[in-house]
Length: 418
Length: 77
Image (cartoon, rainbow over all chains, first blue to last red; front, side, top):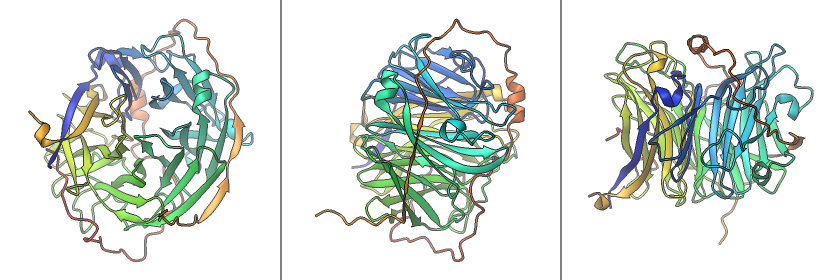
């Protein structure tokens, strides 16, 4: 039976919801549970308790007490349905000594009060006391049955040093106890991307395609109950790192985009990773390279790229739902079309992506600044639905014309459409 | 029958750290000096910080396997 995408909520955040503190490098993140929706981006956080009808701005610079050199930029939000906790990850600025911290803040109160939060601040020196002049950037986070996993790149100045992955017990995050955690780092693989799980399991997989080769993905596994990490090099079809797409304003809206993995998911024993790749002989525009890997054989079993003959696709974020179906959000644009936000899902019965515009922008960035990541997560408690974050430029090319967007959606049989 | 599992290329051990007890005291909202968001936007580098080992291009580009990858374009509705 043919499938379609049913969008049940599609809301742009206005200037009041964001305090007009928006950037074209918006990096929006979202989590949802029933009528409660929590969204973050550069440089705002905002919460709704009535399914996006109204929003309350939460200034990430002042809502929680300052730390380090002050709030910087990257944020992520998550909801752990097993413990009913909201998790807010904030990255702070580099101090003059070249280091920084990130914060994990937690509340179990769905109206996002100004009290009732607890948090921990973690810096490179928390992991290794000798890391006194390095800083953390570009976080990713995902939830397993028992843990919150967080990854960062580690830089000395502007020079990448290594990637780190941390594993925090969710029970302690919920209770607010002493937060012991495990971590591991590598200088052989950058920008580690975790797998979003529609049905959280006791295993986390993550991957990097930045390992010095454009013909492999390195996949890692870390069980909840084990201190050991295993990894496999998985050969994949080579892809181009030369990414660009000219927007209607004549500017390259993907000038800042690179090849790192931006989407990871697991469901039905299949791992899926997605990233932006440059045009090649088979794909005339930048596209979302997508590889599906059998978690037992660690071999590629499908390459369901998202691509177009006429425009570019970029910045894919993916997640399975509780049934293991893959949901996606990404940007689509270039040529005659300003960047727009698209949501969709993989219809494996028809071997195709079912995709719907959430919003088409009216403008494109004037300076090549776009990205760097989107979110697609399981919706709660509608476990076969997804919630996605994105953004568009509407009305001008100015950063203040960015409209962050929350989309709640599912894949349905077309017979169900009335 | 259980699926045969590929042996890992390598297994490594993680380390332990401690972030201590959480902070919980939230003072009244501090009204610090407003950050100049226009300056922040301007300061964002167009090129992202390169991350990872230097790229070594693949020696041979294998063609896409059409048997595994039916060519459905993905334009949104």
